[in-house]
Length: 187
Image (tube, rainbow, N blue to C red; front, side, top):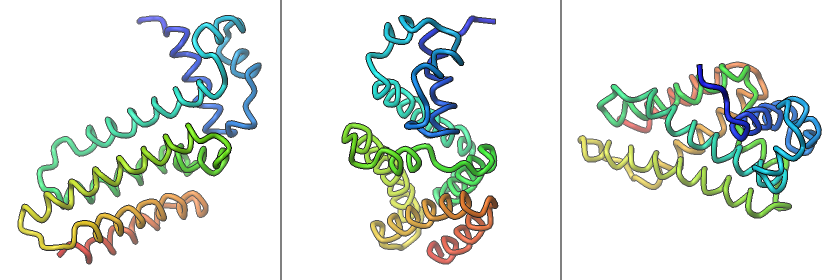
């Protein structure tokens, strides 16, 4: 088994802490202690806690998109891929014990105080929307007939709402309802 690189260990530990207890509640000393590294090791890889936060979000973004790709790999129909996206978001919620979206949580915590981070979060959500739009375009190419922009916006809104509601209520009912609504939108 290959030993985990120090940089990867720092990101892994910081990621867990940022997600579980929040960015502002996580101190550099806690990251250093839990990663079992010297302070110099941290600063050899990251010049600041904000730089570490960006590395965390980049890691989560790559994991999110590759996870969906793997989840939907064998699905051919775009309509079925849209439903797979709902199932994927539901799976992420249950596997995190309803801890919520990494990006929504950081944006809520950081807000406009860090434009680099809030811009990254916005771009991540826009990439998700672009992916949904591509699926809706494919749906129309496969014989569907819906307003691409309207349906894309509705699917995105329903999914993000389902994530927030499931985080609050600690169940997946919102995803099941979202699926029913989207089934009505995609005849």
